[in-house]
Length: 495
Image (tube, rainbow, N blue to C red; front, top):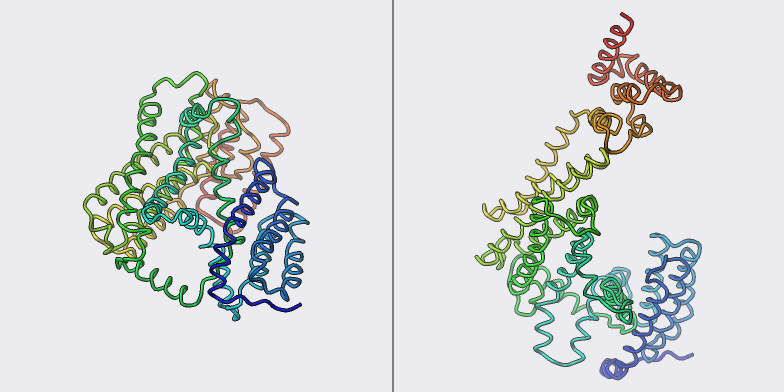
C-alpha cells in the first residue's frame, strides 16, 4: 500500500476541514468514557476504551496517516494492553498510555526520528496537549477578546475549582449547601463531579483525536519563553501566568477561603449549633486532611507567583492579597489541628494521628517562612534552607520523644474504662506499640480485669524487653529506663 504524504499547506486546511468531524468523535468518546468509568471501578473497561480511542484517532486523522506503520502501531498497542487486561494498576496504565502515544507517533508524526525528539513529542502530547482543548474550543469562535479572557482566567478558574472541591470535601455544611443548588429529579444526574469528569475526559481525548505535533522551532521557542518566565522576565507573548492572572487568582482565592474561614470561626472556634443532620464529630474530622492539601497547594501557588524579582512581587496590591491569603491558610491549618484534636479526644491516638499533628505544624511553619521570604526579600534558596533546618530540628526533637509510651498512656487514660465515656481500650493496638507500652498495658489490665490471654501476650512483650537489654550491644537509654521502672514495680509487688 502506498504511503500518502500531505503537504504542510494542505495539512492545515485538512485540519480545519475535519474540525467538526473530530469534535463529534471527541464528544462520542467522552460519552463512552462516562458510560464506562463514571461511578464504576476501572478494569477491562480501560482496555476497551483504549482500543476505541485508537480507532477514533485513526478515523479522524486518516488523511495524514503513514499507512505502512498502522499495523505496527496496532500491534504495539495490543501488546501494551495485555497488562491492563490482566489487571488494571499504575504499571498497566503506564504501558497503555505509552502504547497509545507511540502508536500515534508512528502513524502521524513524520518529523521526529531521534529518540530524544520522540520523547519530547510524547511529553508535549500528554503534558501540554490536554490544555489545547480549552484553547481550541475558544479559538473555534474566532473571538480575540474571548481568547484574551481565556488566557487571563484559565488558571484562576481551574485552581478555584480545585479549591472548591477540597473545601467542599472538608466541610459538610458547604456540601449540603451545594447539594441544594441541584434540585429536581430531572437534573439529579448532573453534579460537580460529573462536570469535572467530562472536562477531564474531553481535554485528554482531544489531543489524540486532533493531532498537532509541534515542530523543533516551536518547541525551542516554547523553551525560550519558559526560561524567560523562570527568570522573571516579562513576556509580551505569554500572559498565561502574568500579573493580571495572579491578581485575579488571588482575589478569587481570598473570597473562597473567606467562606471556609467564617464557617470555622462560627462553628469550630465559636461552638455555634450545627444543623440537626450534621454532627459535630463529622464537621471536625472531615476537614483535617483535605485542608492540609489545600494549604500545600496554596503554598505552591504563592511560590510560583511571587518568584524573586518577578513583576508580581513588585505589586503592593498583590503582596497584600498574598499576605491575606497566607494568613487564611495558616488559620485553616490551625483549624485542622483543632479538628484533629477534637477527633482524637473521641477516638484516641494512633501513630498516624501523631504524625498528622507534626505535619500540620510543619505546614504552618512553612507558610510563615514563605511570608518571611517575601517580607525580607530573600531568595528561594534561603527558603529551602530555612525549611530544611526546621524539618531537621523537628525530626531531631521527635527522635528524643517516646511516642509509643505517650500514645499508650493517652489511650488508657482517656478510654471508656478510665473515664466512663468515649471508646473502649483497643488492646490489640496497645500490644502493637511494643515493650514501651507495657506500663500502660498494666494499667489497662487493672481496669479491664485479668484476662489469661492478655496476660500471656504481656509476657511475650516482657520477654522481648529482656532480650533488648540482655547484651550491652543492644543497650539503649530508653529501654534501660523502662527496665528500671519495671524492676522497681516488681520489687514493690513482691515486697
